[in-house]
Image (tube, rainbow, N blue to C red; front, side, top):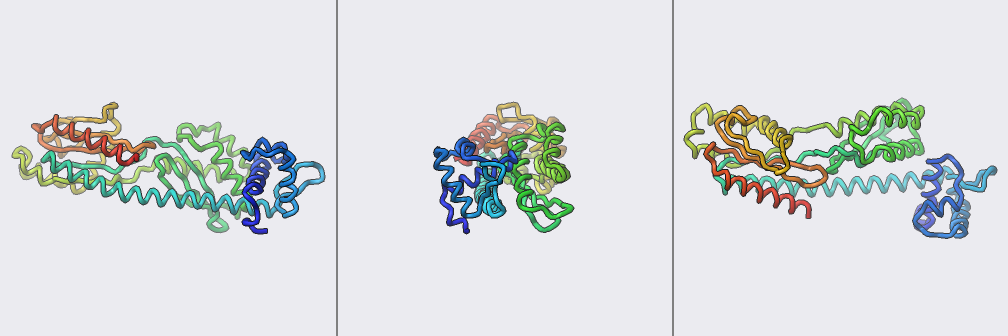
Length: 344
């Protein structure tokens, strides 16, 4: 019996039977299904639909109970449908992210150029990084007989893929139960909230597959805390030569090197985001600068927020005698424009 032969109502009832049986291990009756679905059907109607599903071979009725349990065919249809839905959701999420990232990439480059032009100083804009660290989704799927793929999605829709080794091939039902177990307990939590008590509970419920739980928790921690090198866009470096106090041969060379290598700018972004006091604006004058080569400069940074914990830094670097009012006004304007454009 193919999936297309099931009406939407029958499919929802089958899904409710499978989910309820996976959670309780007990045969499922029509009264339970009437409370478990959003179909608003009477128990009599549900009994008729379940009778049809039984005739189709998707559920069976044990001799010891009036309730039903899924057959192998029912499990298969449920797993195939669930995996198709999950794969489609993840694919759509990836497509949307790629489209947004491409647009954002161009927008940030243009922002850096604009700021350098209107201020006559050097500018930098960092791509957003994750700052909420909440888990949104875990999806385990089979790669081969001894490996699982763990797709981990955290706040900001950051996706991390991790391969997990397994000692023996897991069947679809086991993988399904592990997915339900992990997502039921972990979705919406930060790594700090995934404590020893919760891990112990998960391992106990996973039984002989507790080692997989440990590996998934490790992968989640890595995905949440992993910080790739930030993408940083710069512009207006040559503006530095407009200011005599910054044109000393050694100083200018070090400054240019900082903009080219960008590692120190990465540290500036991290420091600026950490010290954000709620106004979004940070000012570093002379020796206050976290970047050694910029001790003769002033740096003004602004934090932009794209939602879901995605934050980045816009910075202006110039002489200590820079026009602070103009710089702060420009940064605030750009910061608010980025916030509004991306959140549309």
